[in-house]
Picture 1 (cartoon, rainbow, N blue to C red):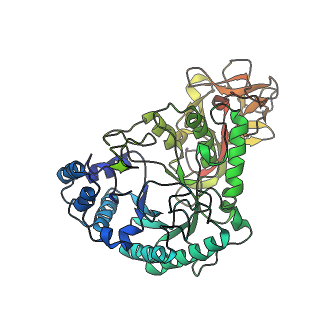
Picture 2 (cartoon, rainbow, N blue to C red):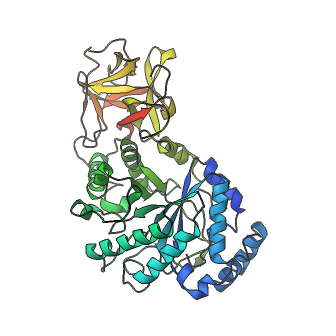
Length: 482
């Protein structure tokens, strides 16, 4: 934003913040920057201290000088590099993201930063700044990618200019630093890439092109607070897949923004997050959570503003919502793709509301319960049977009995209680063919039971999330008999 210095440095030492990021389970930061930090001589020639004073933040500058004395008198660009170096020392990769041209809070349709040709968005300045910034990171191995522009938007947006300038920007970055991945965003606040179904980009390089999209409660579907969540989630997920997810057939796709109000008070956000986690797990998406900063130096003219979407607390010293972070940890490791310990594809049964997976408790006579996804076993879903694969050939199946009764894994498959149907629009509710009851989680949040199916009639104000279970394909070795 206006100060053009990474947030939080008046609250904690830089390496302390980098360490929080690492110990929280993240391996990458999407670090934003403004074009005018490069192209505007007023900004490109001043130090961190001078930038704070220019913005009337003298006391904040004093706090930063005390906590980070090595940064306070660096030019802005060198301070940006110092942040990246600290992240690298902590094993954190960086996606350098051009967020705006004129520094300030983002985003609106009329802020002058939205699309090529807007008041503050000169395409030539943008291209020159991209090349300059990309060249700054030659040889910095933890800088892995450059995102060309955040959330293109506004009345000027059109696909011919998108192709023209995004292709030019991609080539500029590639020429300046061929080691970087190049990330292209879409239109309409980065929610829409469907024009690529008709025409793909034409670039001189291959093998390192990535596309990005954003998904919030307000992105494509209303009703998260009071609607029928089966209908809202399925409609929103379908929209994401039609507008962006189709690219997964041919390209890496990066969900570069999603997030919720971490104080837990936003009902719509609380409903939406399970839907997002389910889709992220199903498609093994790479992602970036908005946002890290617990507070801002200055936001929209106000000093010391708190960020309720933040991972860290206002003082940057603790995790704001450990429960959410535990939930999020379920999608931090890849389910598929190249890497060690690959095996033939199998299924895990993922419960997005808890961020846990279904596993069998051998000490409790086969009772099925929730536990860490890292400890789950291999399941299959063939001919309506949820089978636990034992070795290479034999299977034991999940059996549902009566209302509120515990679900167990039987010794064999084929019995009347081992047949299940997927019955909801989200494809996440499993109903016993025998009892017509749905797979659910017990009141203690540990074991699986069968209860009456929820929200299948489309009525509003209905929340079936406890009954949402997602079959997720996995190719990573997780237990000894695979």
